[in-house]
Length: 93
Length: 387
Image (tube, rainbow over all chains, first blue to last red; front, side):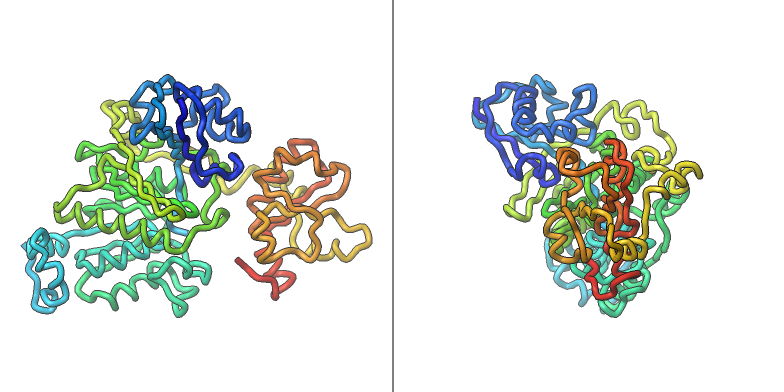
């Protein structure tokens, strides 16, 4: 199952400056693990010490948050787009 | 119902002839009040468009003064108001733009102690701040008061916009992000940079949502997060849901009064313990002291932890190595722990993190140049560019 994962600006420096990466994966969890195998520096930015997705990082399949799907077990279809959306805070300065 | 006088009718005529808007919409705007938290990148277009549109009462909260480096994006301010309080600078411009509206300025930092009182008199709250503690504070206070919070946030070339309004059935900021990143993990605009027109786009989208909330026309962004990427010029939309377990807006809220948001975001108190301070001083050095050391035969090793493109703008007369702070962890082996070393960046923040990291890795002969190249320009070399 080839899917595309989009990397936000804030994390691109840990993913060889790629804006998106295509990988083979059947679930969101497998996709994210495949991603950090390719780019290990992303790991600490996506997962906490217990291996849980960090609370300031959201993952969407299409336009839906995986928290409201099946979390890491959410199945992926061929050609699906998965997005990592971290919290950003800029605006006043 | 408030009435419009003839001067207002001719001023707002392009609104009045919009069938969806009309006299009714314009009167609603005149009767409304909006509190803008932050009068910077997002606050500039927000305040200008809301004042021009005829929002009857605009409140401005900011504690900063206008700096030359603001003018690349903060279009409400100008060269003539550099050094003036941002609230005052904005008020002058808004009065000139529209004398028919009321402006109230609060030259203060929004805190857990004043947030509810600041927000209470206003119909709509707009979040144009630049840090996580203030964003969580603004969210929680708006939820507690049952007011809509028009949210916008930017980073480099990307922006996010939505409307948080649990009182109308929508989610809040904590439903989207239950907890903030630890300090230092996500760079600020001052560290990461921002495309000047980006807050113009995001702030103008926020202003659009404010006007729709007040007049009741159209479909607001409640429950939808719009993402904008200036580099690819793409807009995307994601679904947001209210989390029934949310500690602030959920079915059984556990946070019912404002908390210590600095602590919540993992930020240490400004006054560290005396002992810790003494420890830190040992690992600090001023630009003047560094300048003195550079003239000696056994000068220390100088490490720049900024990005290469920053070194092109301004750099110390001697730099032995450049390793961006985010790459330092993986490149520590390139450094010799046995030589005296001074670490610098633009303002001293990243270099302090680098020194902490290197100390943890066993480096002892290492010092952070406090104040970075900015202070070097002030104290040592006035010809150095400040950015």
